[in-house]
Length: 119
Image (cartoon, rainbow, N blue to C red):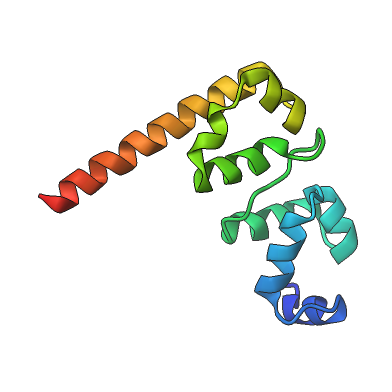
């Protein structure tokens, strides 16, 4: 069993949660985090999932997650032209379409929930 508190302190973090939060936002893959923490990749994946933190895929920086976070706080960002989003976030057109579809579903679901709660 890993002593995450000790690992966090040795890397200069205040606590375990700060360490995982910070590592997950540094655009590191689970494998890179594993090397840094001297644990296995599956151990890192378990810890990230346990905390609900984003997991970067092996292929490169997860620009889709970055765009998704921005769109969650400001859905109008997806109103930009598809080509512009592709250039800015280095993603494919299909990914933009898929993200728009997901965000539309999410907004529709949220609106329906709010209606139910107000009744």
